Image 1 (cartoon, one colour):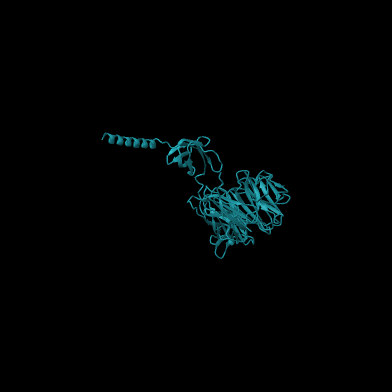
Image 2 (image 1 turned 120 degrees about the vertical axis):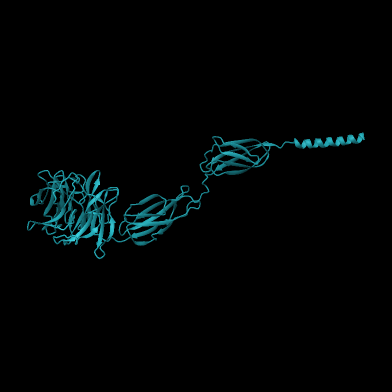
Length: 504
């Protein structure tokens, strides 16, 4: 029995020693080193979290992007790197006893997998469309595969000059472009961006505006920002409606008092430039705006009342500057003083006869009153005095083509106030042959004003402005047959909310 016991104990001890050797046998250790950098710029990334799996050992990259993990048991691992703003990156690593393995991580921006918007499709107007209005709604479409917000950029070119219309940061897929030119071909393109990827450009689409209708009426409307703007239009007598209205001047400029000259086919107007009023010209469609005056501005009492005049051949203009009257060529050359008042009164309005033989003038004092109307020849000699030193407001000069008649307006109430309010302004016609004056507004509605009269091109009618005398109400343009009696029933409303008419 004792012998058997010793044998058993020897076997147990032998087994114990065998198990003990397996337990304390140590697997070799190695080292994992590496660096974290940006994928495109190769700039080191600091504080990137480096994790070893499956051991879950974690370290952070230093200021130069380096990291190290020591005493890592030999074996196969996955090394992961995370950093806010970057895509998580993984690299395999096999650690070998006594050796160091180096792993480089090139981290991509977290948007690297983001997809750009789809190429915009230009929907309307269709490519090659013609007879478009001068205000056109452009419509397009696009989508973003990652549902990112798309911002659009619109660019429009044309076939007549190098002007480019650019509209940035559009969020909608439509835009109304206005103030286009007649008979012009426009090319438009849309760029789409999700603010992550590069812009995606659409194809180029083209459309053409309708032919110039040769509008014959010109007038002024006030924009919401307080500036005046010039418009043109026609009037359809059959439908009793305006048609083809065109905005000729932009709302960021103060432009007023249009005067068309048929010989030059130009429209002259006044515009504020460097805090002064100057004469400009433009084509009938609003293009080719050219400044005429520069050395001597258009000046006097109340710039809204000041008027100037073309020569009938369209080569010159005359305009007032305080107590002086100047002539100037349409290209801005040949500035010449042609008349100066003897009493220092301001010249506010002028009109040059069709044959160029005489000029009608309206003068007033510095308050806008003590008005006179008279004509002079081209040497400055006074020919005819129509009014002299009258009380109340006076204005609206226009000579008939045969030099026989002169239109003007006068406030017969003779009311005067610091704000130049008028109470009963009527249109009169003076006959140079008979020396008589007729009231054309005898049937005018009480409490209203008739202002700014002009002969029609055939001089069978006149065009004028009517408004309430409260100084606040809407001003509108009317026409009426020139029969020396303007009745309320015979007045035809042409354009609402409009002033300073011209009919050529």
